[in-house]
Picture 1 (cartoon, rainbow, N blue to C red):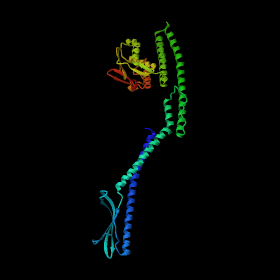
Picture 2: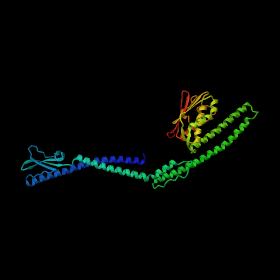
Picture 3: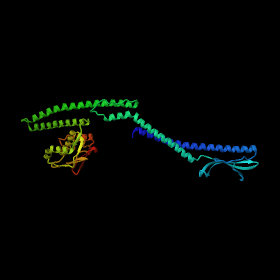
Picture 4: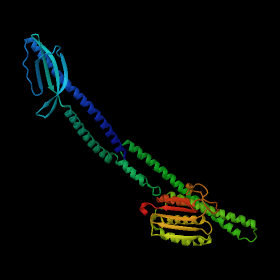
Length: 424
């Protein structure tokens, strides 16, 4: 929910509470004012009647109208009512309903006789007053709601347009295709500060990115050259005829370590490039064909370990990604299934439109399975394992929103890649 909509809802909630409390207060105040006004009229009529009797020593001639009724009769009680103010209802044949009246009863004396006067005045029907109050406040609240929606729309379209423009440009911002972040000028102070901070932040991020990229490229270039030289020198040295078995073993260990270091350097550089999203050229990769090609290339390694390969391709599957990364992804999965297998074991590959699964025999992992895709974590003690192959798989999957899962069940390692919906 947008902040402007949420703010408007708070305003509406507060307005509704204020209108409700105001309506109740208005109704009670109006009710009290009506009672006070009718009571004043009743007591005024009483004073006029008593004044007339005192002045003329005669009973005044009384009349009754639509809104007022005056009744007089000789008091027969030994203790006549001195004064009583009550409410009553009188049925109206015209309205076909009972009308509320305010009734004042008092006793007046003329020539020593007591006469009981009853003055009744109609008051406003409070049900009608309540309905009128609710109707008026309802229409007022509705107009307030319409006005607030109109203001909300105007603010969202005009005042916040620079914010949404900035948000769209930040979403599209890419370090690999950097240009100065062109943000629209705004007259709103908060948006000006936001643009200033974003501009400084993206410039700093791009500068750090360039420095890191340059450092990575330099390290890759500078390390690969001496490693290649050392490797070639070691190979020449290993071909010497006068080496003892101990020296040959030491040279072989050195050669393996240097080769492993070279492979590790390439893998780390590749991880960095993937993290920097330098692989932009995407295409619909035929995963079924790629699996067939990769398994054929690794057939010799599979046969050397006496493994049985079962390839189940139910249907052609295409995934939108970089071709080179797709080859690395499939290659690392296959090599992992081969290296972490047992002699005369099996590998089962199943490709479906929604997932790719590899099952291979082998011993259970050493360590927590949740770290299976972490960098420098290996599930075995094999000397040739870099512990970075599945980290590359995880990094490639994160770029293309592919979800990798791993389970171990009945002596089988089960590694699956769940493809996003757009690729299924």
